[in-house]
Length: 352
View: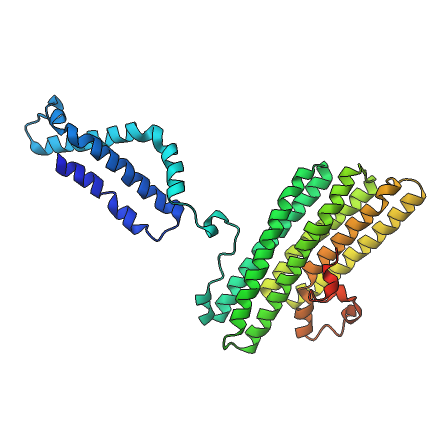
């Protein structure tokens, strides 16, 4: 019987050894199993003589006695410790805490320096992280629009945390790409590094506009009890849907470098500006006709439109280097575009 107890305890050790280098959430499971088995063995050892005297263990075949003991030990162990699973789990979370990267599942995870040996793989890794930045920005936009629709400022609380994550991504992606560009890699990969880095900066600026400007405008709309007319709500909804479509198209251009989609992205940008101009004219007409909000909030709607246009400009910025490399920039009206539309490195991009 002591050998059976030892075998039960020893059976838990391989799982512990095999998960030593696994994530803490995985490692905690075999540790918990080992702890439960060890406690069971410690409690059972002094009672072996009493257990051996039970009629259950008086079979003529020693093998049957050992099988019965093994089965009863594990059944009683499971029943006895079932109520203590959750307390033990909480205790193990303190003993074996999550690492920083695991606790923050949204942190960058694909920026592996080992991939520098294959630049195409390293660039793919960086693009995967940029796509995750896009998901964060989409979540931030959803929260902002939900707050505007429901007039609930609580919806805006997560935007600050999400923007902090966007800043973290921006810093780590650009560091990764800078380190990659310092390697002996072909010029086409150098250009790709710069393009991805520039676009990441554009996305970081879009996050800043969302967090520092757009959320403040929405807070004021709620605080000042400004109720937008239906035609202004419709214009915001139309802009919202255009921006979401442009986000999807922009990330497709980032992935593929497709010139046709890049050209379509610039055309969509012109459409968004047309919507903004028409919305501004309708707003001014509404004020003249006394259909708009009170004077104290008259500028908030225009501020919101401005922020949405600026955010859209940052999303669509990926199209310019694609068209420039294809030699199409000079054949479009883009050369005459305002500086805000061209690249995110202009200081004017940070105004809020």
